[in-house]
Amino acid sequence: LWKCYLSSSFSLEVKSKNRYYVSCLCIDYKINFRFYYIFVYAPAHESFNDSFWNDFTRFILSLDKPFVIIGDLNEIQDNHEKMGGNPPHPSRFRRLNNFISSVCRTFYGSKFTWRKKKSRQDNILEVLDRCLVSIDWIQTYNNAKTYHHPFTSSDHCPISIEYNLQYIKKAPPFRFEIMWTNRKDFANLIQHCWQKKLQGPIYTVSNRKVNF
Image (cartoon, rainbow, N blue to C red; front, side):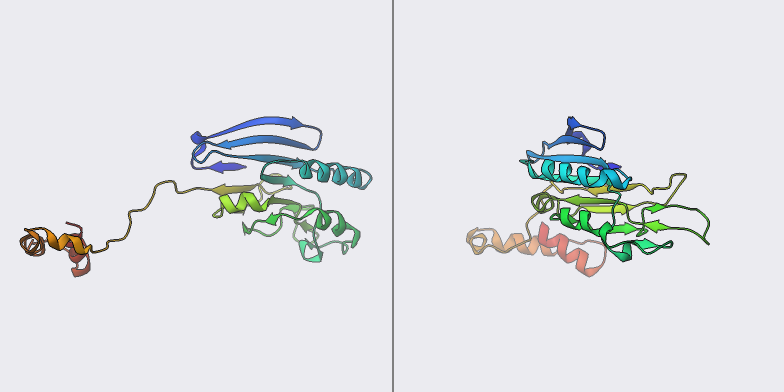
């Protein structure tokens, strides 16, 4: 799931696709920033994994812009990313850990994103779905968050990445300028503003008088 609060200022165009992933060029017109979204559904069968990761790694290294990778990578990083069933073989960690040279976003919600069985007694849980981003992407959208949403009817939980750039500039803090004292009516102006009768807490009243 992709959610952007300023979606009207974005465009998304499919650039390439195959059986396992779709690459899209995204343009953020507000800041003239271009990057790739790659939506992934990696193979689950062991016999296809090495060829997929070799091809996918070459593709990512060929990109000339920042990128976001999101989807089902069908691999885990370590023992902590599996609960239940037989212990994972260390070879399962190799492909994903060799691939990850990007930043894995902090997630919110359930740790695990996939479950094999729905009963509590024999449930198997793993972190198969994730979001990875390049360093140059997160430097632009440094407030991005990844969410793991509750399971529904699927054996995978939905995941989403959300970000919202604040384009509106904040007003600068109040600073007194010494040149203001050169105005002939300076003293009268200060007295007039300070004697205004306003309602509210003292700190609110003081701030409003300063802003006059």
